[in-house]
Image (cartoon, rainbow, N blue to C red; front, side, top):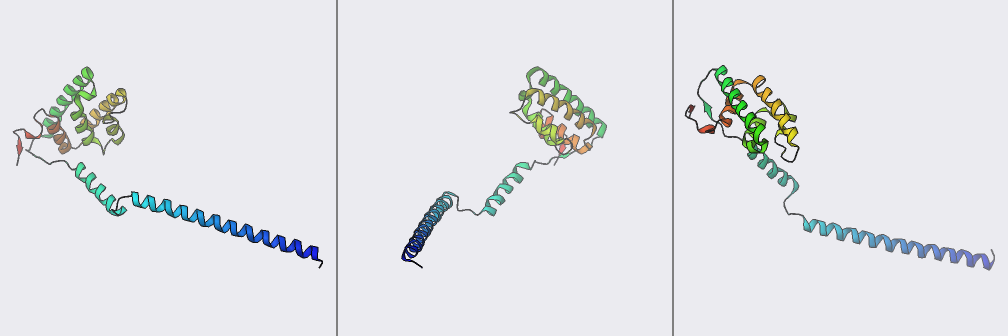
Length: 174
């Protein structure tokens, strides 16, 4: 091998070693920057473990979903249905005159009572960011569901929530 070839090989080897050293240095800088970003992110997060945060959220959701129970005196289901129908008709008249937001508590009670039977309409009825037309249609659908598909005890519960006195009426028992 001539000296010219040896010089070219030596220069090539040196260039490869220099490039490898540069890549090694660049990788080290990237790893350190990533570790620094990760440390900043971990420092910004709360010290509570993820599973505990989810458990706290679940407890909050469960507490919000609870509704107070009230025992209802024995009444014939036909009487309860007739009274509920009259209440829903009066509420429908007020909604037609003033809109669903004027009867927000009644809409929420109706949605709560029918959320398992007609979940889409129940969600649309209490979607206060949605269109009024959608809430009106949902009220009509849920009115039919409440009268035709709810069990008598669910109808009694809804009647108690929609009645002007609420659950504090005189026909409730302890």
